[in-house]
Image 1 (tube, rainbow, N blue to C red):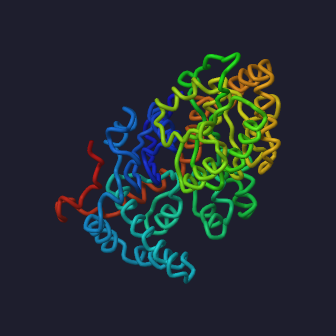
Image 2: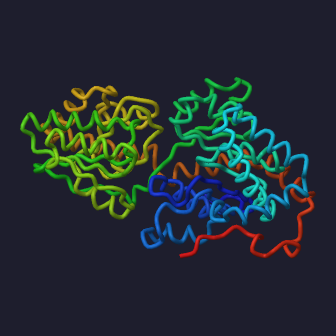
Image 3: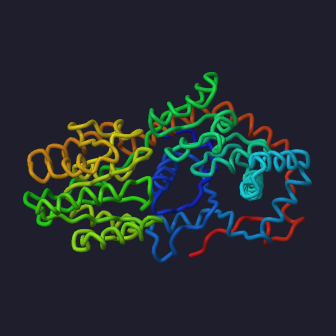
Length: 439
């Protein structure tokens, strides 16, 4: 599906590339392959040094513009250009950002910094003639940006953090400000409906994420694994319910099972989890792998018998799709958008969140029943091929962009052409462009 090559989109993300957001990299590269003129601007620099990036990540980092890499001195020129070209909009944008802080000193400082970033992004868009920006994980910057510059914005809302306190996240305001909003599940769309006026619901699109089943291929099935390998991949945070997963593992160990749990990722709960493991004498049964890049993770998937997710809150985890595509049977909690991906006892097993006994029983049942484990693994891959293939879902997203932007982008482009763009020669050269991360 080759779309109109005149469609130009700026992609604003919080951090790019990032090991826990590899699906954004896939999305960007596949949209370009479909003919979109797409450039990424990232608030943060990559989450790893160049030597630890994959080849695709390194290539992306070289063409990405980075906001915070400018530093204070580099932010001056974009602000001067914006203030002198549109002083009222600049001041209104500043006033709006400060009001979002709602008189809380710490929040007000945070929103002022969002304003600083929004001006830098808007100035970059203006000078590079981008009329539309699509946003992942930087929607507050985008909200302020839309108040200052004649551009249209769209947002992908992943959940579930955004749904916990929609008022503080200004979710209703973002729905109003956006040309359209993509959610990765019907559950996500329902949460946006919950906080927005029904007249805005026509802006909401469901655009599921996806993975490449040609990359995540079926792994060798292990008939009688010893030890039985259980894998978790994700942030080590309270929302992931990992103490429940460890408690389930402890139950299996007490039953005399030969089982090992590998935890891939890092986060604020790591020390608490490590202490918990040591206190209960489970050091020989739990391995903390830390962050792994995609190549390293692929190797670990090949050694995995069950993928387990004990989360209290999620969007629709891409790691579940990856495991399913590799025919690794999955056990996950019955929450948020997960049942849209996994149908209980059809594509995997779903358990009640916080119930360590049920989680242990589900993993134990797969240890006991080799045929069930094989059946659910094969069904999981079929589910991904049917509903969560990368090419299929990126084509769906591309069609959304194509349909939604046809009118709004033309109007914004016209507004940009009418803007008087300052000549690059009139300001110091070092301030003219955002720094691009060098290798």
